[in-house]
Length: 230
Length: 44
Image (cartoon, rainbow over all chains, first blue to last red; front, side):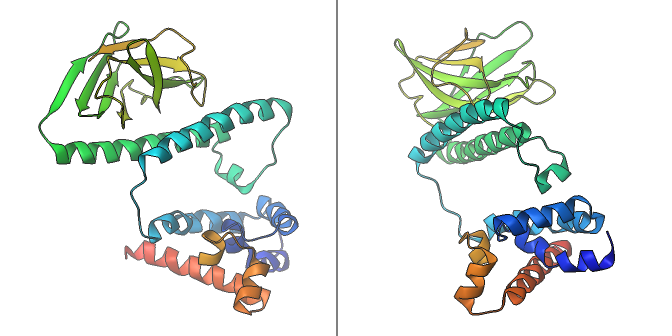
């Protein structure tokens, strides 16, 4: 890439990162970015500015119904993306330069939601204080599961579960013969993990965990790995 | 930056809203992002 070519695109990077370039212009810039180490380096350098933007506005506490809507959308899109990915190769974008495969980004998004909800739940539990009940669950050999229940919400902590990239762990809340989906979670490399259960524990009989296809399922598709009687 | 990131506007729409040339809009986006980055580096 010669200097003239680079200078012509120098002002496009920030606009591109902010998604302010219209389609054809964005594609032209992508072609340049793909072969311009200076712009790639600049993009990496500017990335924290972009990441800071969401924190620059007033933060609001999400209404509980948002989580359900979000998870419904995530499941629908994951199912759709699975079908679309099988059909056609996707357009390359500058994000590819950072070499994070899209499924990993999707996982990260799910994890961030889980972590955010966990943080919220932990914060809320901390405020409420003492009335936390702990229940030990039945888990596969070598694994442990504990549900810490505080009123209607709680946290499931697991150890010794295999890290799976071909699926995701889904938490279910059982009430009588009814089973409702709750949180999705992944475990760390060491097999430990935590899942926030933001609601529905007050009158629950059991908390269960199954391994489900990416994006989770509306109904369990496999036998539970973990069963915790409350 | 606000109009682009939170408003979802393209650079030409921003130029129209602010009554500025396109080049100025892109230049200011760049300056704003660089300034934020520099401040982050300083730990502000």
